[in-house]
Length: 89
Image 1 (tube, one colour):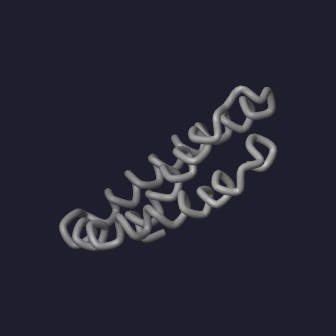
Image 2: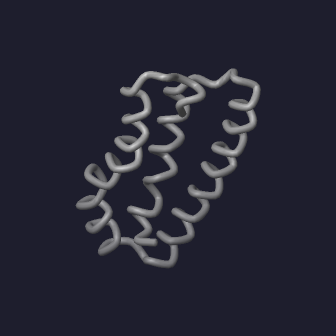
Image 3: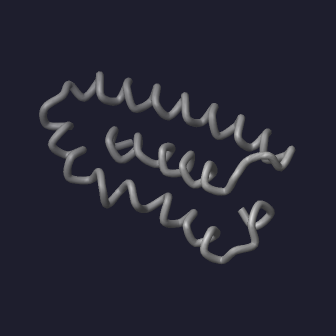
C-alpha cells in the first residue's frame, strides 16, 4: 500500500478493511449459520473467496502497472475478509 500512496491514513485503512467486516457481520453470520445448511454455506463462502482471490490477483497484476487506486485495494481487502467470517472457516 505504501507504494501506491504514502498517506498514513490510507495505510491505516488497510487494517480497518480487514477488521470492519468482522464487527459488521459477526451477529448476522451466527444467525445465518443457525438457519442455513452448513455445507451449503461453506460451499458458498469458499466460492466467494475463490472469486475474490482471483480479483485480488488481478488487482496485484494491475498494481504492478500502477493503474489501480488505493480505494480499490481497500474494497477488495474488505470483500475478501467477509467469507471467512460468514463461513466460520
